[in-house]
Length: 286
Image 1 (cartoon, rainbow, N blue to C red):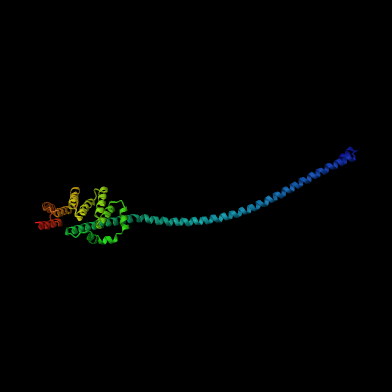
Image 2 (cartoon, one colour):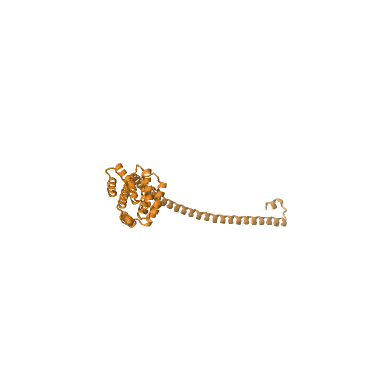
């Protein structure tokens, strides 16, 4: 209108053109308004979603806080358990030396008892062979009857499975008491190969000779008894081996050699049971 007034001569065509431009601008503005309104709607939706997300997050934070509190309680409980375990461990540490001492004491007592039993069995077998009653069946019943009942094949296998010298010797001696002399010789010889110089080595050598004696293989018995005398001169089985050498010579009818051996026993071991047995045997062969 200003343009019309200024120009003073605006035509109808100019007015129409001007209206058309205004209408187009109005349409453009309306479209922009609609676009803005749609953007506002999208923003509202996004805002609502973010609001829901914040609410969920807050709820999650609350749950996490509860979990943290529960975890703290568990930690406190675990700390209490750890303290209790520490007390138990400290108590055990204090008791360990005493327990070790008791265990060592029991091992020593067991070892002493085993040595005493072995010596007793040795003497019983020697007396049996001296009296002529140590046959296969009687040896098992008299010398090892009680032990034989308590030693099962499975326990014997367990003994043989151990590598220490005592268990190897015990297994061989058990075989000897069962009257399996050939197997016993093999086991005793294996023991001597593994442990040639122990407190049981002279015993093992003696039982090899004794196994031959009980099988009436007196020549071989004499040779293995001699190994006891030569290889273990300081051992306590020397007088036994000498006596059984004398008995073996008597069994072979060699009274002269038997006298020499028995007189040596009397000379080297006076005032002992071995000397008394040798004197008794010398009286018999005169």
